[in-house]
Every structure is written in C-alpha cells, then in structure tokens.
Length: 398
Image (cartoon, rainbow, N blue to C red):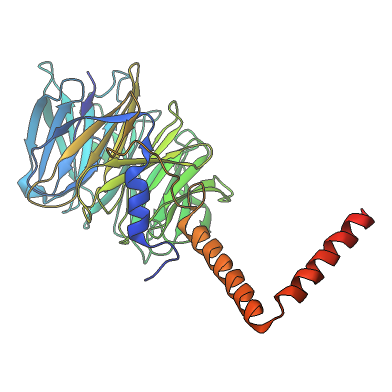
C-alpha cells in the first residue's frame, strides 16, 4: 500500500508565459483524483499535513483516507519525515510543529499509527527534518541552528548534540550526507551551507551559493536548491559548483518544494500561480505543468513516489478554506488545454521565445523604415546598385 501522510516588467510578459505553459503538453502525467480534507493550508507532503494541526494518512492506490491525527496543542505542523526504522517501509514517521516540538508515530498491528513520543526540541518553528536509516538518527532545524537525535528502541529521541552555535539566519533545511557521517545545513537569507561531521561534532566546511535558499533536496552528490527568485539550481557536493539550472517564473519569494523522480528522469517544483512545473532532470528542459488551482494559488508542497506502476506525484494547495491535494499518475499523454497544438514555451525553457519574436519584428520594422526613407529620398536605386556590385564582386572573388 502506498500511503501519503500530510500536513516589474520582464522582456516576456507573465501573461504571455501563462498562455504558453497552459497550452504546453504534459507528456507523461494525468490527474488521477483530488483529496480534500483540510480547511487550512497544506504545508508539506510526505504525509499530508496542514495549518489546521491535522495529519491525514491516505492510500494513494484507492484514495481512501486511512487515519486522521489531531495535534491542536502543537500549533501548525511545519515538517514531516518518514523513518524507515526496520526496513519494513513506511511504518514510522516524525513531524515537527510551530511550537518547536517533535512527535513520533508508529504503525500498529491494525495498520493505524499510534503516538510514541514527543520531544520539545526547539523554541522556534521546526523548519526541516531528515532521517538517517544507517545510524537511526533524526536531524531537525529551527531558528538559527540544527539539532541531532538518536531514535531509541522505545521510539523516543535522545539528543546527540549540545546546542550548536546559533547563526543569524533561519536554518532552512538539513540533510544527512556521506552515508550519515555528515550533516548539511542550509540557511535561508544568507545562502550559506554548513557541513558538520557528526562524530565528533565539528564544522568541516562552510560555503555560499548564488542567491537565497528556499528549499533544498539532496540527490546523490547533488544539492538542488530553489533560489526564491527564478529557478532551481543544482550544485555538486562538496565543491558547491553550480552545474545546472531549472528556470521558471516565481512571483512571490516563497520556498517552493522540490521532488526528484530519478527513474522517470524528472524533477517537480511547486509553484505560486496555480500550477507546479515539470523538468527533465538531466537536460533541464521544461516539460510542462501540473495545473492544480487558479491564477494566484500557491501550490508549494509537492512530492513524488516511484513504484512498479510508474511515478505518482502529489501536489498540495496552500490557502485556507478549501485546501486540497491532487494525485497525478504516469500514463497517457494529456494536454492541459482543449487546444491540441503544443507551442514551444518561453526561451527560458526551449524554443523561440516571445522576446526573440519581438526583436525580430523590431529589426524587420527598422529595415522597412530604412527602405521607405531611401525610396522617398531618391537613394534607393543607388543602394540597389551598390548592393548589386558588392554581390557580383564577391561571386567573382569566390
């Protein structure tokens, strides 16, 4: 059973961009069904969680709601992670909340999840969680610092690190690296990445990337990060050399989530105007969009799962009152509009952009104006003779 637990002018006008992408064909994905339960924003997806202090566990096969978990005392739920504790798959998860506490739940014999422990790990909103299955460690980030925990046999969290030095900026994401021997910590405003060795706890290196860091995903030896402005950048670890970019329009500086499906060769990025973007992972080519809502809707959370039947993607809406998730599955080609044509998207992605079309049109207009002026001034025949003589001389020389 697959389960989802949840909680200025540019050269290309944005209206033109939306017109292009709304007609662009999604090659591999179609909407399977929509899941609705939350009354407030869906913040992250791994499990479905939201601002209404509610976790909902769904079956992505049948769209059946398996369980609801209410945690009103914890505030809104801000981070969640599956923990493969015993190689049995999705049996345990942890979530972090706005009051700084971290709770652990485990699947019981009746397939429902039961509460195991709660730890007041931070005094700020838990921004990110990461799980290391090799050493059974959990990492969390809140405020300006990360924290490390051992998961004990009774499913409680035992601290590993004393309070690390607090940075001036928000610790946005944490990732285990080097088979769990190191921890990567990214900071939102400064664009800095810190790498710590875990045993002993010590700073190994500290580097800075281009732009700010919204969300980040560690994929093998690459770190993919949203710069909150106009793209997702892919950096190599540990050199932090930028090797590729996935360009897309960002209207608001919101931390859009990223999900990578390596078998499908795709990367999915949340959006802030009603749709998520799909890119080819290897080439960076824009593949299309997953249209979830209306213009202006924030579709920030996104996650993907790859199984025998192919790739399944889940997008979540981030607004109050009628939040929802949409489940997309790999299948037949589907056009996002009734129009069967698939024009090329803007040059940011591929093909001839509206910008280039405007430039070409301006050049043509300029040439026409020159010709008309020459005609009126009586010099057109002289220009023609000069051009003719130049061509003849060139042919003879050749």
